[in-house]
Amino acid sequence: MTRVFEVLTPGLSASVQDQGRLGWRRFGVPASGAMDDHAAAWANRLLDNPPDAPVLELLLQGARLAVVEEAWIAVAGADAQANVPTWRIVRVRAGDQIHFPRERSGVWIYLAVEGGFEAERILGSASAYERGGLGRLLTPGDILCRKPDASFRLVPTVAGRSVAWSERRDYDSPPPLRVWPGPQWNCFSEHERESFFAQEWTVTSRSDRAGYRLTGIALKPQPSQIISEPVRVGSIQVPGNGQPIVIMRDGPTVGGYPKIGMVDPADVSWLAQCRPGAKVRFRIVG
Image (cartoon, rainbow, N blue to C red; front, top):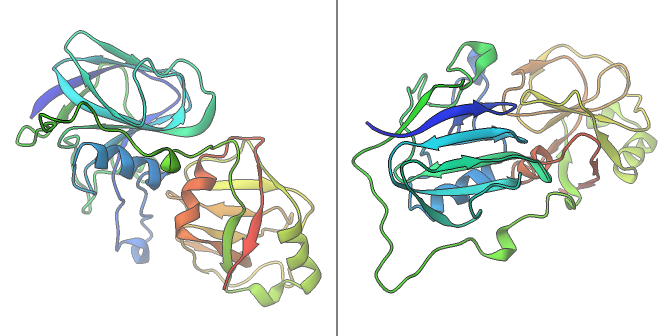
Protein backbone atom coordinates (compact mmCIF):
# COMPACT_ATOMS: atom_id res chain seq x y z
CA MET A 1 0.00 0.00 0.00
CA THR A 2 1.11 3.55 -0.73
CA ARG A 3 0.30 6.19 1.89
CA VAL A 4 -1.22 9.21 0.20
CA PHE A 5 -3.26 11.31 2.68
CA GLU A 6 -3.50 11.99 6.40
CA VAL A 7 -6.88 13.14 7.68
CA LEU A 8 -6.31 16.36 9.62
CA THR A 9 -10.03 16.88 10.17
CA PRO A 10 -12.91 14.95 8.57
CA GLY A 11 -15.26 17.92 8.55
CA LEU A 12 -18.90 17.02 9.15
CA SER A 13 -18.35 13.45 7.91
CA ALA A 14 -15.82 11.52 5.85
CA SER A 15 -15.94 7.91 4.73
CA VAL A 16 -14.76 5.59 1.99
CA GLN A 17 -17.47 4.54 -0.45
CA ASP A 18 -17.68 2.59 -3.70
CA GLN A 19 -20.56 1.32 -5.84
CA GLY A 20 -22.12 -0.41 -2.88
CA ARG A 21 -22.71 -3.75 -1.24
CA LEU A 22 -24.94 -5.51 -3.74
CA GLY A 23 -26.92 -8.69 -3.16
CA TRP A 24 -27.33 -8.46 0.62
CA ARG A 25 -30.61 -6.60 1.04
CA ARG A 26 -32.51 -9.85 1.57
CA PHE A 27 -30.42 -10.26 4.73
CA GLY A 28 -31.24 -6.75 5.95
CA VAL A 29 -27.98 -5.16 4.77
CA PRO A 30 -28.43 -1.99 2.66
CA ALA A 31 -26.25 -1.41 -0.37
CA SER A 32 -24.68 1.82 0.95
CA GLY A 33 -22.21 3.27 -1.58
CA ALA A 34 -21.71 6.82 -2.84
CA MET A 35 -24.74 9.03 -2.25
CA ASP A 36 -24.10 10.80 -5.57
CA ASP A 37 -23.00 7.99 -7.87
CA HIS A 38 -22.85 10.41 -10.81
CA ALA A 39 -20.16 12.62 -9.24
CA ALA A 40 -18.26 9.68 -7.74
CA ALA A 41 -18.17 7.93 -11.11
CA TRP A 42 -16.78 11.02 -12.83
CA ALA A 43 -14.02 11.39 -10.25
CA ASN A 44 -12.93 7.83 -11.02
CA ARG A 45 -13.32 8.17 -14.79
CA LEU A 46 -11.04 11.20 -14.87
CA LEU A 47 -8.23 9.00 -13.50
CA ASP A 48 -9.05 5.90 -15.57
CA ASN A 49 -9.89 4.04 -12.37
CA PRO A 50 -12.13 0.97 -12.39
CA PRO A 51 -15.80 1.91 -11.85
CA ASP A 52 -15.80 0.20 -8.45
CA ALA A 53 -12.64 1.91 -7.17
CA PRO A 54 -13.24 3.29 -3.65
CA VAL A 55 -13.44 7.09 -3.32
CA LEU A 56 -13.48 9.44 -0.36
CA GLU A 57 -16.94 10.88 0.36
CA LEU A 58 -17.11 14.17 2.29
CA LEU A 59 -20.18 15.88 3.73
CA LEU A 60 -20.73 19.60 3.10
CA GLN A 61 -17.61 21.32 4.43
CA GLY A 62 -14.71 21.45 6.88
CA ALA A 63 -12.57 18.50 5.75
CA ARG A 64 -8.79 19.00 5.57
CA LEU A 65 -6.26 16.49 4.27
CA ALA A 66 -2.46 16.50 4.28
CA VAL A 67 -0.75 15.01 1.23
CA VAL A 68 1.81 12.40 2.26
CA GLU A 69 3.01 11.38 -1.20
CA GLU A 70 2.69 12.84 -4.69
CA ALA A 71 -0.35 11.60 -6.59
CA TRP A 72 -2.95 12.41 -9.20
CA ILE A 73 -6.39 13.15 -7.76
CA ALA A 74 -9.81 14.30 -8.97
CA VAL A 75 -12.50 16.10 -6.96
CA ALA A 76 -16.15 16.17 -8.08
CA GLY A 77 -19.56 16.82 -6.56
CA ALA A 78 -20.62 19.61 -4.23
CA ASP A 79 -18.89 22.98 -4.26
CA ALA A 80 -17.21 23.66 -0.91
CA GLN A 81 -14.66 26.21 -2.17
CA ALA A 82 -11.92 23.58 -2.42
CA ASN A 83 -8.38 24.95 -2.72
CA VAL A 84 -7.79 22.63 -5.70
CA PRO A 85 -9.56 22.71 -9.08
CA THR A 86 -12.62 20.46 -9.26
CA TRP A 87 -14.07 18.27 -12.01
CA ARG A 88 -10.58 17.81 -13.46
CA ILE A 89 -7.35 15.96 -12.68
CA VAL A 90 -4.87 17.60 -10.32
CA ARG A 91 -1.33 16.66 -9.34
CA VAL A 92 -0.70 17.08 -5.61
CA ARG A 93 2.66 16.84 -3.88
CA ALA A 94 3.89 15.81 -0.45
CA GLY A 95 3.38 18.63 2.01
CA ASP A 96 0.33 20.07 0.24
CA GLN A 97 -2.97 20.36 2.05
CA ILE A 98 -6.42 19.97 0.51
CA HIS A 99 -9.31 21.63 2.27
CA PHE A 100 -12.99 22.33 1.77
CA PRO A 101 -13.74 25.37 3.94
CA ARG A 102 -17.24 26.46 2.99
CA GLU A 103 -20.22 24.75 1.41
CA ARG A 104 -21.77 26.76 -1.42
CA SER A 105 -23.75 24.27 -3.48
CA GLY A 106 -24.69 20.63 -3.06
CA VAL A 107 -24.06 18.25 -0.17
CA TRP A 108 -21.61 15.45 -1.03
CA ILE A 109 -18.01 15.81 -2.30
CA TYR A 110 -15.95 13.02 -3.88
CA LEU A 111 -12.18 12.74 -3.99
CA ALA A 112 -10.63 9.99 -6.10
CA VAL A 113 -6.95 9.05 -6.27
CA GLU A 114 -5.14 7.24 -9.05
CA GLY A 115 -5.79 3.51 -8.69
CA GLY A 116 -8.42 4.02 -6.02
CA PHE A 117 -8.14 3.97 -2.23
CA GLU A 118 -7.18 0.85 -0.36
CA ALA A 119 -9.91 -0.20 2.06
CA GLU A 120 -11.10 -3.39 3.68
CA ARG A 121 -13.89 -5.02 1.70
CA ILE A 122 -16.70 -6.40 3.82
CA LEU A 123 -19.37 -8.45 2.05
CA GLY A 124 -17.78 -7.46 -1.24
CA SER A 125 -17.67 -3.69 -0.72
CA ALA A 126 -15.39 -1.07 0.81
CA SER A 127 -18.38 1.19 1.56
CA ALA A 128 -18.67 2.30 5.16
CA TYR A 129 -22.05 1.62 6.76
CA GLU A 130 -21.52 2.89 10.29
CA ARG A 131 -24.98 2.07 11.63
CA GLY A 132 -24.47 -1.56 10.72
CA GLY A 133 -20.90 -1.79 11.98
CA LEU A 134 -19.51 -2.29 8.48
CA GLY A 135 -16.51 0.00 8.21
CA ARG A 136 -16.39 3.35 10.01
CA LEU A 137 -16.25 7.09 9.56
CA LEU A 138 -12.78 8.60 9.29
CA THR A 139 -11.23 10.48 12.22
CA PRO A 140 -8.25 12.86 12.61
CA GLY A 141 -4.95 11.04 12.18
CA ASP A 142 -6.29 8.34 9.86
CA ILE A 143 -3.99 7.50 6.96
CA LEU A 144 -5.48 6.85 3.53
CA CYS A 145 -3.57 4.63 1.13
CA ARG A 146 -3.90 3.99 -2.57
CA LYS A 147 -3.26 0.86 -4.55
CA PRO A 148 0.46 0.82 -5.43
CA ASP A 149 0.12 -1.23 -8.62
CA ALA A 150 -1.90 1.41 -10.51
CA SER A 151 -0.74 4.79 -11.74
CA PHE A 152 -2.14 7.49 -13.99
CA ARG A 153 -0.27 9.20 -16.79
CA LEU A 154 -1.34 11.78 -19.32
CA VAL A 155 -0.30 11.14 -22.89
CA PRO A 156 2.50 13.57 -23.90
CA THR A 157 0.30 15.69 -26.18
CA VAL A 158 -2.45 16.25 -23.57
CA ALA A 159 -2.08 19.05 -21.00
CA GLY A 160 -4.98 18.03 -18.75
CA ARG A 161 -8.33 16.32 -18.44
CA SER A 162 -11.65 17.70 -17.23
CA VAL A 163 -15.34 16.83 -17.23
CA ALA A 164 -17.55 18.37 -19.92
CA TRP A 165 -19.65 21.29 -18.72
CA SER A 166 -22.80 19.40 -19.62
CA GLU A 167 -21.97 16.85 -16.91
CA ARG A 168 -21.24 19.39 -14.15
CA ARG A 169 -24.56 19.71 -12.42
CA ASP A 170 -26.08 22.84 -10.96
CA TYR A 171 -27.17 21.39 -7.64
CA ASP A 172 -29.13 24.54 -6.78
CA SER A 173 -31.47 23.92 -9.73
CA PRO A 174 -32.41 20.23 -9.83
CA PRO A 175 -34.77 19.17 -12.62
CA PRO A 176 -38.12 17.55 -11.78
CA LEU A 177 -37.13 14.10 -10.54
CA ARG A 178 -38.58 11.17 -12.42
CA VAL A 179 -40.83 8.86 -10.41
CA TRP A 180 -42.26 5.47 -11.31
CA PRO A 181 -45.59 4.38 -9.76
CA GLY A 182 -44.97 2.57 -6.47
CA PRO A 183 -46.40 -0.73 -5.23
CA GLN A 184 -49.12 1.12 -3.25
CA TRP A 185 -49.98 3.60 -6.01
CA ASN A 186 -53.64 2.64 -5.65
CA CYS A 187 -53.61 3.49 -1.93
CA PHE A 188 -53.55 7.14 -3.02
CA SER A 189 -56.60 8.78 -4.55
CA GLU A 190 -56.31 10.65 -7.83
CA HIS A 191 -56.42 13.88 -5.83
CA GLU A 192 -53.52 12.75 -3.61
CA ARG A 193 -51.43 11.75 -6.61
CA GLU A 194 -52.07 15.09 -8.29
CA SER A 195 -51.12 16.89 -5.08
CA PHE A 196 -47.84 14.97 -4.86
CA PHE A 197 -46.75 15.88 -8.38
CA ALA A 198 -48.18 19.41 -8.45
CA GLN A 199 -46.42 20.83 -5.41
CA GLU A 200 -42.85 21.66 -4.45
CA TRP A 201 -41.46 19.59 -1.60
CA THR A 202 -38.86 20.93 0.82
CA VAL A 203 -35.91 18.78 1.93
CA THR A 204 -35.74 18.91 5.73
CA SER A 205 -32.74 18.96 8.07
CA ARG A 206 -33.69 15.47 9.27
CA SER A 207 -32.27 13.99 6.07
CA ASP A 208 -29.22 11.72 6.05
CA ARG A 209 -27.69 8.73 4.28
CA ALA A 210 -30.64 6.57 5.38
CA GLY A 211 -33.44 8.75 4.02
CA TYR A 212 -34.38 12.22 2.83
CA ARG A 213 -37.42 13.62 4.59
CA LEU A 214 -39.67 16.01 2.67
CA THR A 215 -42.27 18.44 3.88
CA GLY A 216 -45.25 19.92 2.06
CA ILE A 217 -49.02 19.52 1.91
CA ALA A 218 -49.60 16.23 3.69
CA LEU A 219 -50.75 13.18 1.75
CA LYS A 220 -53.43 10.81 3.07
CA PRO A 221 -53.01 7.25 1.83
CA GLN A 222 -55.65 4.63 2.60
CA PRO A 223 -54.66 2.54 4.44
CA SER A 224 -51.96 4.53 6.21
CA GLN A 225 -49.95 1.40 7.07
CA ILE A 226 -49.30 -1.90 5.31
CA ILE A 227 -47.66 -5.19 6.19
CA SER A 228 -43.90 -4.65 6.09
CA GLU A 229 -42.39 -5.50 2.74
CA PRO A 230 -39.07 -4.92 0.92
CA VAL A 231 -38.14 -1.38 -0.01
CA ARG A 232 -35.33 -0.21 -2.26
CA VAL A 233 -33.25 2.91 -2.71
CA GLY A 234 -35.51 5.61 -4.12
CA SER A 235 -38.73 4.27 -2.57
CA ILE A 236 -41.03 7.16 -1.56
CA GLN A 237 -42.73 6.07 1.65
CA VAL A 238 -45.56 8.09 3.16
CA PRO A 239 -45.83 7.60 6.95
CA GLY A 240 -48.77 8.58 9.14
CA ASN A 241 -47.96 12.29 9.15
CA GLY A 242 -48.32 12.40 5.35
CA GLN A 243 -44.80 13.77 4.79
CA PRO A 244 -42.81 11.59 2.33
CA ILE A 245 -39.49 9.91 3.11
CA VAL A 246 -37.25 8.86 0.21
CA ILE A 247 -35.11 5.82 1.06
CA MET A 248 -31.41 6.51 0.41
CA ARG A 249 -28.22 4.42 0.27
CA ASP A 250 -28.11 3.39 3.95
CA GLY A 251 -31.88 3.14 4.31
CA PRO A 252 -33.92 0.24 5.69
CA THR A 253 -34.52 -2.82 3.54
CA VAL A 254 -38.15 -3.28 4.66
CA GLY A 255 -40.90 -0.85 5.55
CA GLY A 256 -44.56 -0.76 6.53
CA TYR A 257 -45.66 2.53 4.98
CA PRO A 258 -47.40 2.90 1.61
CA LYS A 259 -45.10 3.82 -1.27
CA ILE A 260 -46.54 6.25 -3.77
CA GLY A 261 -43.59 5.92 -6.11
CA MET A 262 -39.96 5.11 -6.77
CA VAL A 263 -37.44 7.78 -7.75
CA ASP A 264 -35.73 6.71 -10.96
CA PRO A 265 -32.25 5.29 -10.08
CA ALA A 266 -30.58 7.86 -12.34
CA ASP A 267 -32.20 10.72 -10.38
CA VAL A 268 -31.41 9.57 -6.83
CA SER A 269 -28.04 11.31 -7.15
CA TRP A 270 -29.82 14.59 -7.94
CA LEU A 271 -31.88 14.32 -4.77
CA ALA A 272 -28.79 13.41 -2.72
CA GLN A 273 -27.24 16.78 -3.55
CA CYS A 274 -30.27 18.78 -2.37
CA ARG A 275 -29.47 20.65 0.83
CA PRO A 276 -31.94 21.10 3.70
CA GLY A 277 -34.35 23.81 2.61
CA ALA A 278 -33.99 22.97 -1.08
CA LYS A 279 -37.18 22.64 -3.14
CA VAL A 280 -37.76 19.59 -5.32
CA ARG A 281 -40.48 18.54 -7.72
CA PHE A 282 -41.36 15.15 -9.13
CA ARG A 283 -42.81 14.03 -12.44
CA ILE A 284 -44.46 10.73 -13.29
CA VAL A 285 -42.98 8.37 -15.86
CA GLY A 286 -44.13 5.05 -17.16
